[in-house]
Image (cartoon, rainbow, N blue to C red):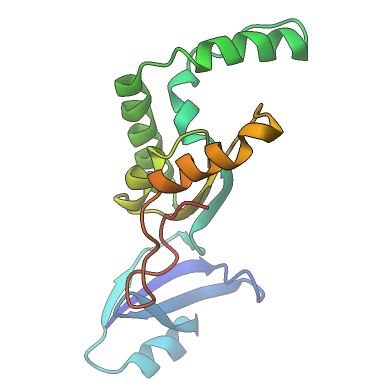
Length: 181
């Protein structure tokens, strides 16, 4: 069982622990507390990994991302007003190159993971983000954004989108991972 020690542990729901440790078993945190107590509790077979002058905290959650728009990150739409910006944004969004959009979304997923993000709530116009997120190291949910539809078209549009979503995972599969909503 690995035990990670660090100068500071931020459990979030409790005060910061100075000179603390976290024990992990099968990917789950089993103990958090002062270093000496956690190491003693873990037993003689524990593999102690000293992270030194570091802060350990729970993984970060990005509760509102737009991975389908990651391709625009370096070339944001101009506009002197919200209306102008929205007009240019909508024109550019609808002309996105699918391969470039996918590559940028994959790059953004990797960047979020590298910075400590473990879960994401993504707002997307398309269902193509669902498998990208499901195959990534992140956990998350994709909220399909639907805008501008007329009442008479609602049922048809919603049925079409629902048909593109993957079948929800069963309780025995990796729960909490990317699914369409």
